[in-house]
Amino acid sequence: MKKIAMFLFFSSMIISIAKGTNIEEGTLLNVSAESGLKMRSTPGLDGKLLQVIPFGETVKVINSSSEVDEQIEWVAGKWIEVEYDGLSGYVFDGFLNRLATPTYDYEHTVDDMDLIYPLMAWTENHYSDISAPDTIFEGTVTKLIQAMTEGTVLKKYDDPYLFKIEVELENIRVMDAYQLLHSMLSEKYEKISYKNNSVFINDNVGQVERIKVGIDNPVEIKKLKNGKVRITVKSYNEGCSL
Image 1 (cartoon, rainbow, N blue to C red):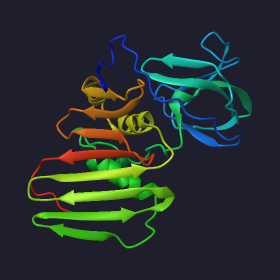
Image 2 (cartoon, helix red, strand yellow):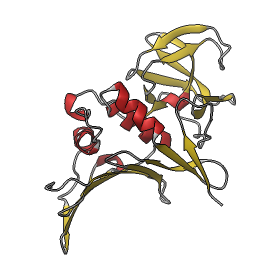
Image 3 (cartoon, rainbow, N blue to C red):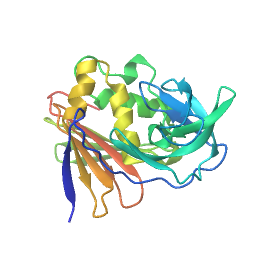
């Protein structure tokens, strides 16, 4: 039976997520912790602090075979050895991922928590089309399906009352997608509301397989059977078009 847990950012609840497999030496990963990621001399929170790696910076994996697992705030992961700016040390990999950091203004919200257009812009900016899009008409609904590089798929659904996009990504965790959207929010109150309205749905071994964010333009992040992670954002505003 699936376990459903309401996540409140300021509570002491800790949610378990799937632990990743070992990452190949030399892999480049991006820091997703917006307050920066601490590099330590030994794996674990008791290691001497060497430096804080800023949000969006890239580190190179030296060794990811560490068995030191940790739960920090609301993220589970393990400590891995990385190199950054000529210095090597250990960091918590729950706040590292392969996704490009949103940096452009159009990859961020405009004071309304509507993540549709920032997510669409981010996807189109970092992945290229590999074929012409498929357009499907079903009554009042128009579907546009775009295959992109790195196994990414962008889908747009439009009808008179609903505009929805889905982005399917390979080789990421559910939490990576959650953190990506969080980094697209421009204002502090948006970030707080996003976290306070998040519901995590665990599978039968306690690993997060789906997240729902109950905001005006609702979000769902889901692990698919094919291993991809799908991000869905809906807008109920009238007059949207592809």
